[in-house]
Image 1 (cartoon, rainbow, N blue to C red):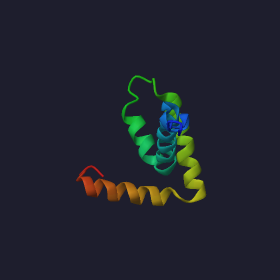
Image 2: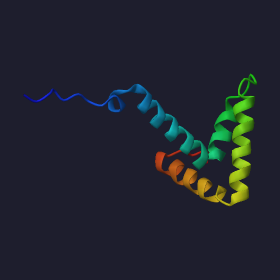
Image 3: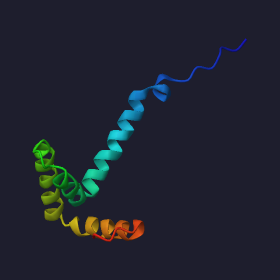
Length: 88
């Protein structure tokens, strides 16, 4: 008699999905730091986002130093055109 098949804990754990979610968020922040700076700057009226804003500005400066900032700006422009955002 065969034993019942049990899914491994790694496939049913919510922690695995949280790791994937945070990995995607981190990739987004590092891929589009200029957009993150703009978004945080617009929402920092009360000053509560000064820490994340400083971190995003540092990441943006690092991407400019490496030379990938232009790619992010181009992708943001294409996405704004795609969704019909007239502000950019």
